[in-house]
Image (tube, rainbow, N blue to C red; front, side, top):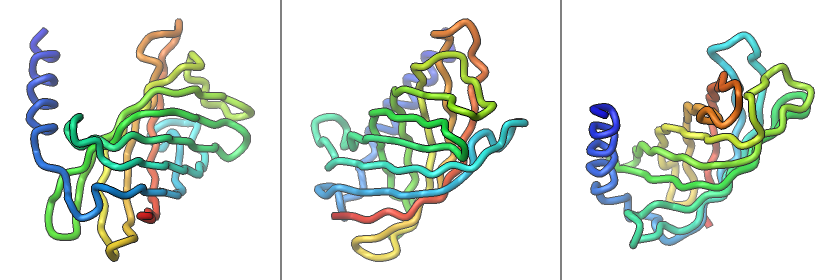
Length: 164
């Protein structure tokens, strides 16, 4: 119970920090490459795509997001969720994101135990210009014990972001 209370309090504090205002009203397309299961034995390459909508001011400036990634052989994930960013310095931001989606194992060895998976990430980004940025992310994908097995896995990606 203490963990839930601590996590809820921390989440409420983080969501109360104002979002960066430079581009809160635009869409963002992030295209990246990285590795799936970098901490495990089934490491494989991945390509990722994320489309973020404008920040929803009435919901703590969270950006709705469509997320997808494809693994080296034929596995993939498609999901929806939200992304929240916080300013670190003039051009630096960090963020948290989470969502729910469908995972298809394909020919990969990365069995996650269920088709429905939760995907959460933490990121740091650097604004290259008013319309472009780069972002490094570390994520975790898990079925939250919906399936009989819940091995989970991590992701590490580097993305280029275009604002439009």
